[in-house]
Length: 370
Image (tube, rainbow, N blue to C red; front, side, top):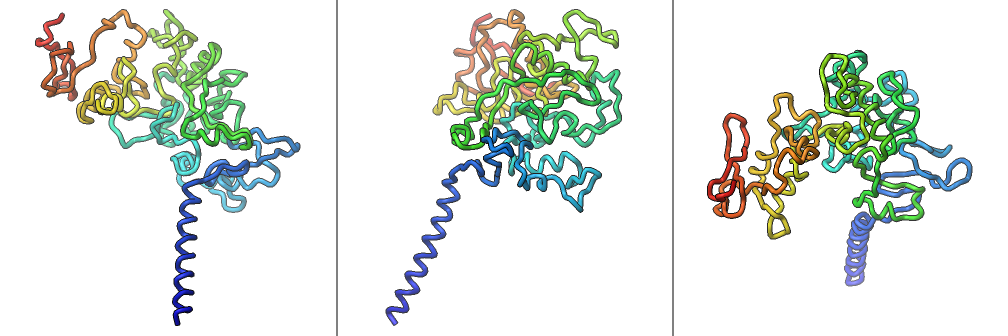
């Protein structure tokens, strides 16, 4: 009888060990050439027998099964055999919502902005719901085609790292791809440092790289927003004047002021380039202000009549990021509302304005500084 008990005990111990081992294995995922990340599989050798230099959505081997991620040979919901959910963007988001694709377009760290609609002050390119011809500033391009992810991106790949097309909305804006300023994404350090991952590099981008790329980026946007493609002192076709968008100079490119995908209050910055996260970071953890989330959110809220319009900066603070001579560079940032020390070292304090429905700066008499 004791031997039977011992047998059951040993069996139970082995089961526990196997469960713990499974959890440990899942937590300590080791990238391999063919499986550089969980559920991501790429070929290691191309069809010419060379080491595969990975290209997103392309450069597959002859034995690939990757096509089936998006297409169904006999049961496609479109003439191109795509497996739509409801719209094309739904298909793209089946991976790029953070569940599978490396680039999460609903996340907060994407260089192109976010498609996140859960926060206030949000605005974005509403793929799947608007026509190309309805774009602000659209004059010549009145296309009735629906704006989709593939309006700007080639899902099968391109020589641009973010799969940007050279022909958008029927307009060829450039014969050369836009080179982007790319840096390795620290969130995927293990993959990026691997020497056997098919050349796969997961990167972040702050926008176009060189002078020509910045101009091409403006041309890229102007395929839909055609009257916004303008130079300094130039009158548009509508008879108005617009801020320069087609210059390679700092601050004179669409990507300098706007996110391509969209923005929300967690991404918006003030003229100092600070976000809500910067202002709410506790002083004990190295933060300078330690504001409450309520105060920081009210401060950063965009109250422009037209909405945040995919802006990187809240309201019109983007102007001050370049035109620094228009305001004093040594103006201290505001103290937190209700701070008992307000006025002892800060020039400005913030009070609630029912007119603007947000906190606004007011001169602090206690500072005795003008």
